[in-house]
Amino acid sequence: MYNTAKKQLWVGELRTAKGNAIVIHDNQLPQASPGRIYMFHTVRNTIVEFVEDIVKVNLHDLDDEQIKAAMAEFGDAWKAARAEFMLKHQSRIDLSKVPDTAPPRKAKPVAEPDEIADSDDDIPDFDDDDDGDDDDTYDEMGDNLDD
Image 1 (cartoon, rainbow, N blue to C red):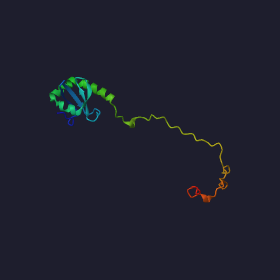
Image 2: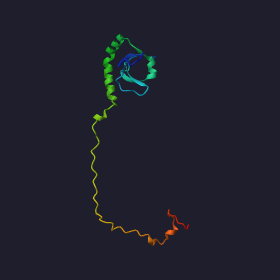
Image 3: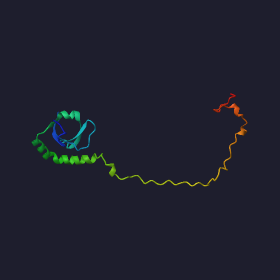
Image 4: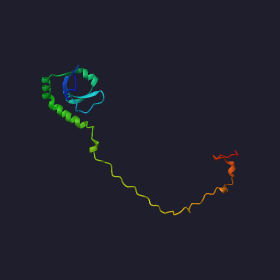
């Protein structure tokens, strides 16, 4: 039965109502979506994504002689399909090897003031004595007590 824990490359037979086909599963292929697996399908001559729970019961081991015959017949097609598949699915990129592509930061120019104020003489003092109100008419929150 289908078991990839023992071998990196598993060669077996997929038996379906439409017919039987030799399939190859490689543990070095990128991970498929959860619950799915990638296998090389010899009739389709491409790597196909299968639903693992559905296809698992239809996968059957080949004996050593059948595996040798299958690899002799489909080995070159498998290697070509695998190379093409790996080029398309290079989703794992080592970001430490990717050069920085952002433009260099420019220093912000420092604005120079037009006039330098030496003292606070230009600012008039606030005088609240001219409002005409008596401070006793307001509470500490500034509410008018006369209202």
